[in-house]
Image (cartoon, rainbow, N blue to C red; front, side, top):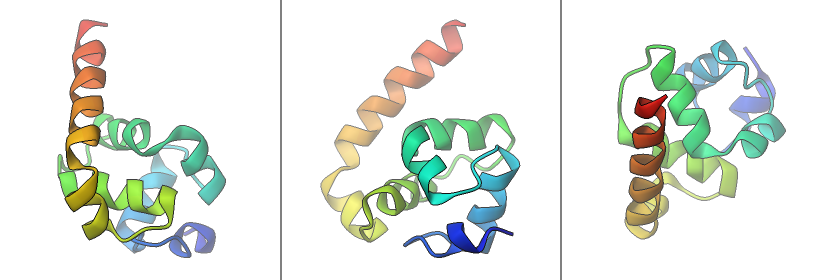
Length: 91
């Protein structure tokens, strides 16, 4: 398991393992991909559809607590996620 991923705020052993399975193995890789695309990769790989994981990923990218993300950026993330899911379903 990537110790570097575990060093990120909000990322525990399970999430780090999920990220590694989808090819996100470093903090920089997560930042490069972004929280929403990483979340979609996790879903495509069979991880549970759990918005707390999305808040945690965005918090890891921004070095902020996932609770703060859920409170203050929920609508933006849900709007972006809905647009990507719609596009994803079209392909």
